Amino acid sequence: MQQPVIISNQRTNGYPDLIVYTAGGGLAPAYRRLRFNGSSYPTNLTGEPALPTGTTVTGSVALASRITPDLAAPLVAV
View (spheres, rainbow, N blue to C red):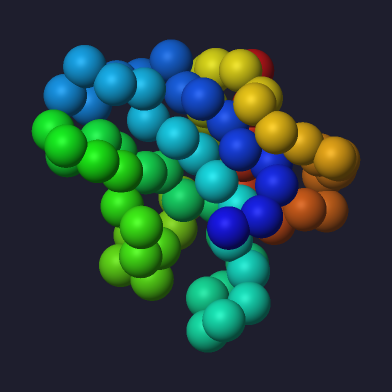
């Protein structure tokens, strides 16, 4: 997992979804939504689907050194 990490306003099982950027290690560059399953968030991101191009996410950026339009591009953060 790399930066940015976004805490989404959308919730699953009472906890906010986490939007993370992934690349490398066999994963194509993409943003992925991590949902709380009742006891934890996924630790293996290879099973998490990439967000579709143009996905709009509302929330707060928790960790980011930079967010630019060329960074995996399918995310519109509001």
